[in-house]
Amino acid sequence: MKVKNLIYALLIIGIVGFIAYRISSNKAKNDESKKFGGKDTPTTVKGIVVKTATFDNNLSLSGSVEANEQIEIRSEVSGIVEGIYFSEGTNVKKGQILFKVNDIELRAQLRQAQTKEGLAAENQRRAKLLLQKEAISQEESDVANADYASMQAQTQLIRAQIAKTSVKAPFSGKIGLRSISPGTYITPTILVAKLVNTGKLKITFSIPEKYASQVKSGSSIDFTVSGSDKVYNAKIYAIEPEVAVATRTLQVRAVADNIDGKLFPGTFAEVKLPLTTIKDAIVVPSEAIVPVQNGKKVFISNMGKAKEIMVEATTRTDASILILSGLKEGDTLITSGVMSLKNDAPIKVKVK
Image 1 (tube, helix red, strand yellow):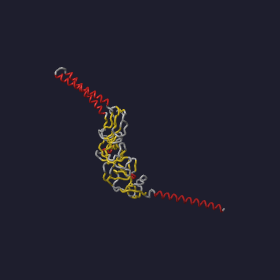
Image 2 (cartoon, rainbow, N blue to C red):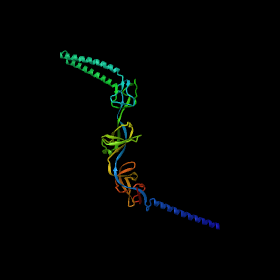
Image 3 (cartoon, one colour):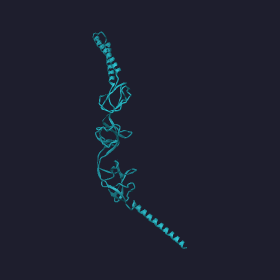
Image 4 (tube, rainbow, N blue to C red):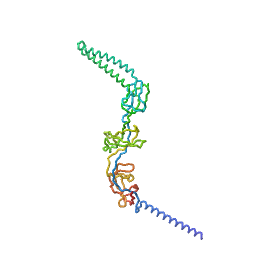
């Protein structure tokens, strides 16, 4: 009998203890819930006091580096290459002979044409004298004149073809790798080498159409290239006269001096285009912005409660965003926990 009573007593003690544990656990959870955003307990958040400042509005764009001048060296005539007068990867000057095609056959044709031209000149002279003596008709004299002019043109044509056998550099620059050797039979379809002027380089990039009115010829830009931390400067010299319909962008071109020779055509460029500098601008941290269906909103502290405000925002960087309307100087902007905040929620702001 005593054992039975002992068992009942232990069961009663266990049940009472379990009930007490559940009550204590629920109370702790309720306290924790109130601590983190309950209706009566304010949520602790971080914030800043909105201030105005001068905002340098820089537009980050992608561009490409291009040679100021670049051509493919080819021969205009076919024949055997008899001499190459440049070294690969070196600088050449404008007018320098790069290679020579054999012109023996053309020079033989020139001598033949010169002989015929001399004969035609003599026939013209005789026809002129005979016409003065009325020994021949005007028609015969005209034929002699035409023959002479024709032979002069033939001689000039052959001289032009001979001149084309000496291929010269059209501008000063650096010549690339050659694909021919002395003795090669060359035709106009064969690429001999590429000639590039890298003393100056073009930076080509495109901007969104909404910024088209803010770009002017003569403006300076900064740019960097892959593999280098150096910031280069270039000046805009040409702007496309129309916006590309397919991309809704405007193509712009700037020129930069390649003083140290470390810029190469074809490389990728990160361009920073300075737009209009804005005075008394309001710039806020990006984490304070809450995207919503109809725009963007922020929260400010108002009498100990979170107040939701719709804002108009524009240009942004990695860490900040420019506010056009909605905020004013002196507002306490909430910068943490904004995604879970609700309008009129009690808050306690720690101002940075």
